[in-house]
Picture 1: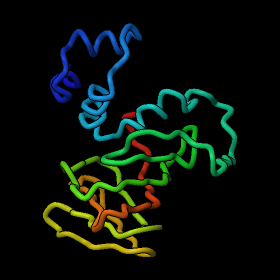
Picture 2 (picture 1 turned 120 degrees about the vertical axis):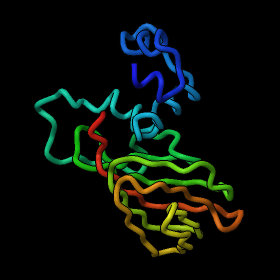
Picture 3 (picture 1 turned 45 degrees about the horizontal axis):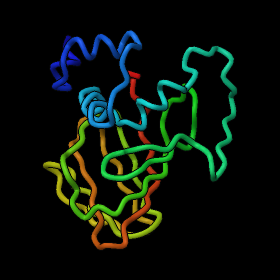
Picture 4 (picture 1 turned 30 degrees about the horizontal axis):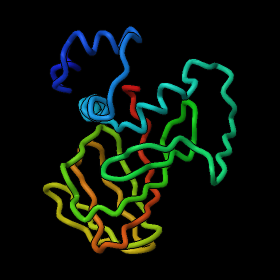
Length: 166
């Protein structure tokens, strides 16, 4: 099993997950998400997104207190759409000053800062300091990570293409 190797999890455990006989811990879910070039939040949404429903509505309304919420990188994301869609817009909040490990996925990503100041580190491209109203776009395959420039944290609007793996 390639996924088991990439996620550094046992083959029997992945097999049990696939058959619905086991539930992953948050640590295991993070490993699986990274192996797929995705996030825990996107995995949770994929499990509930009705992707097999041919009668999905053409219009999706997500109110301020709605949307799938969960871990995304070093913070918390709230998906602003549900169902099988071409992209995933989300609200992202965090206060990490340590950007942590790089994330890489095949999909393009757009980031717009709503509150605070954030350093966006694009491996090989540089570190970009963004403030309120600033935006950055990078192509899929770009290793990236984010961190707050001060203790106040930050809030961003992130748009990522929907992962094809999910």
